[in-house]
Image (cartoon, rainbow over all chains, first blue to last red):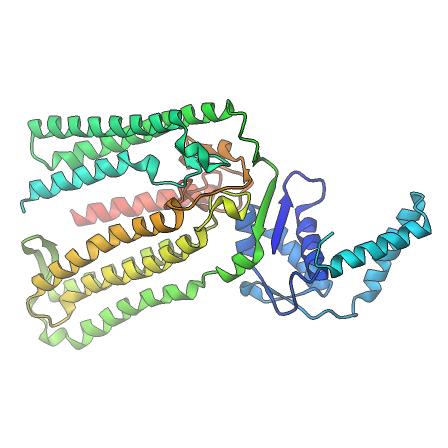
Length: 125
Length: 343
C-alpha cells in the first residue's frame, strides 16, 4: 500500500494523504481491521509536520473511515452509511460543478460507471 | 600487553575507521551526496576520490603516530593525535563532499532524482513499528543493583573495586560510596541506552521511495535490539562488584573480551548485511542542500530533531531546531562534568 505525497502540489499535503487513503479503501487495497502507521512514524517518513498527518487522520476519523488508536496509530473501520449524507452533499457539489462546466449527463454517467469499475478492479483513481 | 601497545592498536583501528568512512555508507550515498542510482558507486572518478581520501587519512595517521611518539609517550596519541585526525577527517570529508556534489551536477543521467515526490509503503511502516516498551528491560539492572546493594551489603568487603585495568582492579572506594557510585552508573547507563535506543527508531535519511533505502527496516530493528543488548552487557559488567563472585578480575576480563568484539562487530555486521550489500534504486528526494558538508543536517521544514546520518550508520541533530542546540550543549556539558568528576 503505497502513499505518494507531492511536496510542491497546490493540494494541501493532509488532503493528499486523506484522499489516497480513501482511494485505497475504495479500491479494496486496504481492508477493515488493517492498521495505519502512527502519526509520528508517517510524519517522519514523509518529512512533514506532525500536525499535517494528524489533520489527515482526524478528518478520516470524522468521516468514518478510520478509528484512532492514540499512540498506536489508526485502524481502518467497516464501511458504514452513517456519513452517507455528507458523501451525497460532496457528490452533488461535484455534479453541480461538472454541469456548470458543460459536462453532459451521459458523460457524467460514463465517468461514474468507469470510476466504479476501476475501483472494483482494485485500481485507485 | 603493555599500555603503550594497547594505545597504538587503538590508534591504528581509529585511523582505519576514519579512512574507511567513504565505504561505511549506502551504495547511493557518496561522501554525503545522495544519488538515485547505485551504479554511480563504481564511477571511476568517485572510486579515485575514495582511495585518495583513504590514502590521505592513512598517511597523516602514520605521520602523527611517528611525530607524536618521538616527542613523548604513546598517551599523546590520544591527547594530541585524536583531535588532529578527527579534525582532518572532517575537513577532508567536507572537501571531497563538495567535489562529488559538483561532479553530480554535471551528470546528465541523474534523471531519477526528484525534488517533489515522496512515496511511503504504509504496510511496511506498520509492520516495522518498534514499540518503545522493549527499552524497559534496561531498568531491570538498576533495580537489581539496588536489591543486591541492600541484601549483600553485610557480606561485601570493606572496599569495592570501581575501576579496572588489564592487570586487574586499580582503584577502590569504601563500600558505601562504591555502592552509591555503582547505582548512579547503572541509572546513567540505563538513561543513555534508553535515549540512544529510542533515537534509533528514526526514519531513514534518504527519502523518495521504499527502494531508495532497501533493508533499512531490518537494520533499524537489529540496531534497536542491539542497543538493548549492549546496555544490558554494560550494566552486567558494572554490577559484578556487588555479586559475591570469586576471581572477579578473571570474570570481568572474560566479559570484556567477549563483549568488546561483539559491541564493535555486531553493528558493522548488521550494517553490511542490511545496508551495504543492498542495491538501492528508484526515485529519491534531492535534499543534498540540507546536508552541510554532507555531515551537518539543517532543514527547517523537517519536524524531526534527531535524524539518521546520511550514511545510514548512527544519528545526528537537525541543527535548524533550537532544541537541537539545547540538547547538544547539555550533552557536551554532561561529558565535561563527568570528565571533571572522573579526574
